[in-house]
Length: 82
Image (cartoon, rainbow, N blue to C red; front, side):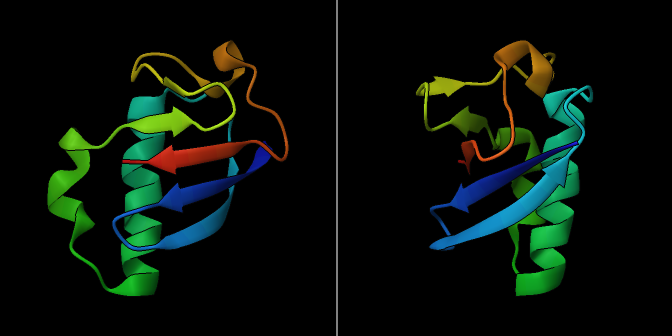
């Protein structure tokens, strides 16, 4: 597990997440959206297939098929859900 900050510009918020670095990004995005929507009571759920996870430090969009370990995402990294 890695502890990361995930910024969601559409909500103007940043969230702390503990994510399994060996799970594909395509699985992590819906899990994060569900947790964010439970907290914020927002409507991101219908947009899950259009959302991307990006690494702010390297400025790259993470492939849905890849996992965080492949991108060397470690504790303290900053990600963005767009």
